[in-house]
Amino acid sequence: MADLNERYRDRRGPTDVLSFPAATEGWPPEEPPMLGSVVVSVDRAVVQAGERSLAVRDEIGRLVAHGLLHLLGYRDDTSSGRRRMRRREDRYLRPEGGEGTQR
Image 1 (cartoon, rainbow, N blue to C red):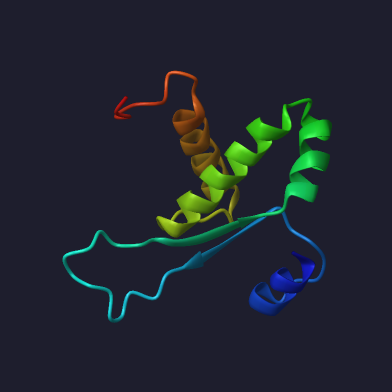
Image 2: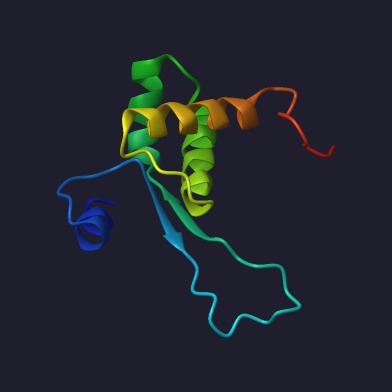
């Protein structure tokens, strides 16, 4: 993960989640669009779960949600952006599934 972080974000050291938007050129128009890929560091998730007194699966879920929000265009490079992303993460990770979720 540290290698990916340095190669694609020019930042040294590991990170917890990275998002890579999909190249849409040549994507069949009749197919649903692919957003991209989310890479989660399970090692970081284990550490962060311990720091936050969460189950590892809950931390991984939050990291996946965070990565997906990045693919949808959300940014967390400002304090207001971080707060907005956290509210969205909380919304979609609610036990009842958040608003608009089909069951």
